[in-house]
Length: 342
Ligand code: KG4
Ligand code: ZN
Image (cartoon, rainbow, N blue to C red; front, side):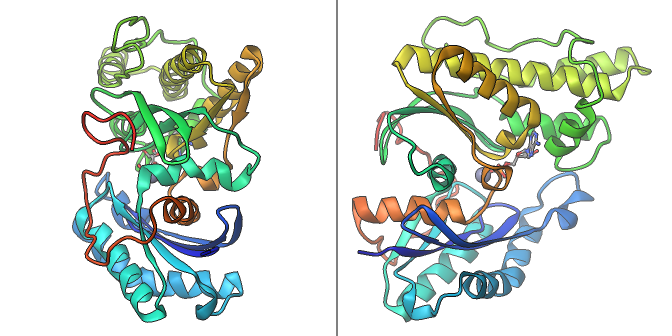
């Protein structure tokens, strides 16, 4: 049984490698961020990202292996993110993982990045029990997932336009706060008044088939219109009121979904799960509803390779090794089209 997994993550702007035992014990987790190289452009530039991954992956891998205190021949399998993400970036990690698996004569495991985010919480809370509802909020995705069993997911709803992280990034860019926007708005909001401006809560009152869906593009437009109309408004109040609207929608919909499916726990994942207000309100809501809250540490919420190694361990148990002709799939989904579980 393969127990020690080397995980590799290069789907976007973080080059990461990690060594994890049995999907629970993180021996090392190294993340090299490229944010400085993209910040001046206000977002991730795919060509720059691929080149930076090529440059950084070897030193990051070496550091992960050294920090793990493990020899090459003690690695039982190599897992890498195959999608969703930027194709040029994904290919760097996938190629390296397949080469290592071939040379070390161990299995290669193809991992869905979103499944990685789902497993981040398990790394730190091995007692976590399924079924659960997971609120997955990142720069590219916003979804509510009913995690029925390992590898068995039902997508309850997702965003019909912008992802929550994308809304944070776009609003921050409009306010001239730089990239990525989430952490800056989080910090600025700490000294603002969340009740100062009543921004819209998109799709909050839906009761039909789209009741678990999200929409953040109207909120972004409302922020832009408000600031244009009131140029002297305090940036802290705008940040706090915008964040309050996002958090309100996310937490309200997550607890409704948990209630509807009868889940005994709610789990948070993805980069936006690093947000202070969201973490606080999420735990408070679970307390009020008498269900368990699983909130990974901030480092496990944003992109990392430990979560890829953990998801890889479960995938390998369920499906065995992935073929070495597996490529990168930029538009990979968590749940197949028309199919509610995989
Ligand atoms: O999961 P992630 O690291 O990468 C993707 O897979 O997209 O998420 C990145 C997103 C960015 O949009 C970033 O602005 C947001 O997570 N983010 C935050 C915070 N930290 C990162 N959003 C709100 N508050 C934060 N503290
Ligand atoms: Zn991510």
